[in-house]
Amino acid sequence: MQPVSSPVEHLPAIDVSEIDSRTGDQILEAASKWGFLYIRNHGFTAEVLERAFDLSRQFFKSPREEKQKCAIGPDDKGWSAPYSEVLDPEIQQQGDFKEAINFGEFVDGKAQQPLAKSLVAHESELSGFADRCHDLCIRLLQLFAIGLKVRDEDGGKDWFSSRHDPSKGPSGTILRLLYYPALKESGSESIENAKEVVRAAAHTDFGALTLLFQRPSQPGLEIQTPSSTWAPVAVYPPGTEGDAVPPIVVNIGDLLSYWTAGVLKSTMHRVCIPKKNREDRYSIAFFCHPVATTELTPIPSPLVSASENDARKPGENKKAQVLTAAEHLRRRLAATYGWDT
Image: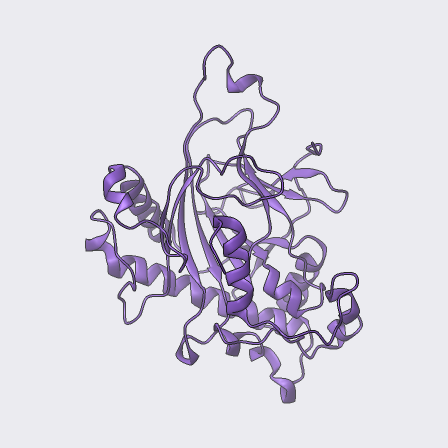
């Protein structure tokens, strides 16, 4: 078992209200070192976030039979029951103790999947929240391209964002509501005596970028540091305690790391139950994926060219067949849920 170190104190909280080279350099530096960062001035108000968490709580309080009607399938949409997800297949003997519901892309404000009874009347609100998340991801992708110094003739700041344009086709993008129930005492042994309780096993994210929205009193996210220890990520990092809402956590997914030959890090992370906080945890994640047919070829950046050889695993030929975003996602989902590819 890897040791847990002190909280990560050096993840920056970056103001993303402007799309400029200074901001691009800042987020590139954080993502290159940690694979994680916080963002502020992101456009989400306290009212918008509170409403989204209200809808999440309503859904997860629904009877199991209602949730089962929209159970998750190989398209990665729907409700996943406790223990159904195995994020670390080589280690886990049982799945994660959490529930989640995944919403795929909305088309003209309409979900392309069955909705639970508690959510049917709120379809437009869910669609609007997903649109806000996507718009923010486009802003971040533009900033990363600026930080990577992509020339205008090669696509400039729109190199990534143009590959995440919904008008060009469907993608694996997912809006996910998550619920981690509080663990109670079992038999004669209390979880207070446990060294650590993992709610979501160690994993990296499948897509390009992830946005994570958290509640002020519900910590639990941990990231693997460069020294291979686990470090808690505060909900409110130093200097943000007076913000109306917690900063959004942004992390790099496998695709963005692959695209940049490892310049941007896709960092292992997990969710644990902190010793001093055993309550329910609700969070919302937005997993931003490129259009499904996008080929995962390296971005034309001078910073990436110097590191391109490091993008492949040992022994892997640089001229190997190029994966599409859809092929990559199918492989990862098959490993997580045990589905056939």
